[in-house]
Image (cartoon, rainbow, N blue to C red):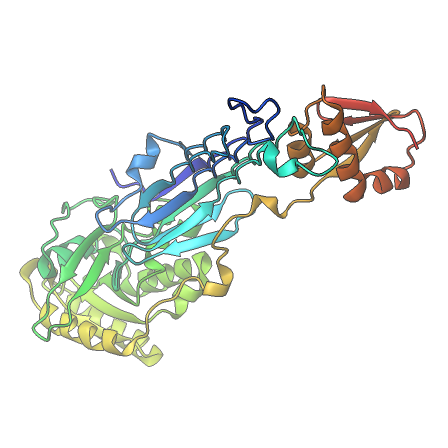
Length: 424
């Protein structure tokens, strides 16, 4: 099954906690602190794997979590870092932040990789809190939380040439004639319901990849029909081959069809309307095609389009078409969907404020990732640990901000599990 988009939740590993430990050796009654630091949490890394073609695997698994860092231990032993989580995706996949729509990366080259979620830093052992006045610190700092978020994976096929047109105009037949691909071919609409890829081998040694895009119909940009699901796959192509049924079978008007498809491309993405196009006037072996071709050429050649009369069913005219395509591809620059400056390579959840203050009745609530980490590091049963907390919140400006918010002596301050009365 061809799956070209997915929504998954990723979480980097948490950092390991710092240890609280003291030297306990023979003949040493009161050894100093020797708690080791915690290890770093594992990152979440996406890698483009040329062996993958769809996002099918993400249909069955939606949550991905990297390994946590190990806790520190006594004797100054640092905990082991958590293993990075490698998520493999097909080349051509764009990674987006679901909430903001921000694009993190567009992985197009095999082996290309990017860190999307960073693991949390390891906590600090109690040995680092020792000072001349605090010689026996009985508290440590826990590891930081790993970043977590929902991301959208969107696959846009890597093809040099895209075959576009209404259903049943012969796109799949063309692909089967000029490549080794074997798409399903039948005489009914929407035979092709997933994009097909094939490699075109030319005598001039200018091989290229061709994609057969499922039939686009009027209103596709609004979600009508099947084509709207695959319009994104045209965006990477350097050149479009617009296939029309020049015979006018099924009561179709080739000129109207040509204009309709181009209008759909423009509405979906205005850039697509400027993409170079070559017209393949197919089904020339059917009666009436010659007369229709003359009228069609008069209508579109003034717009600068090259028209190639072909009959894919009997393999006529395809050599000229493919040769022209191979020559045009040499002149057309690579398609760039996303400029490097648009890409945010690594998601940083820590861009948020270190804390916020809000008031509920006479209770002042302090929240935020930084302040939570501080509270988690406090040993509420230890006087030195509480002193460290008080000095830190004053140094960081929390006391000043509480006073600006209108706090008065005797009011309650709540910082997660910790509650205390404010005293000037």
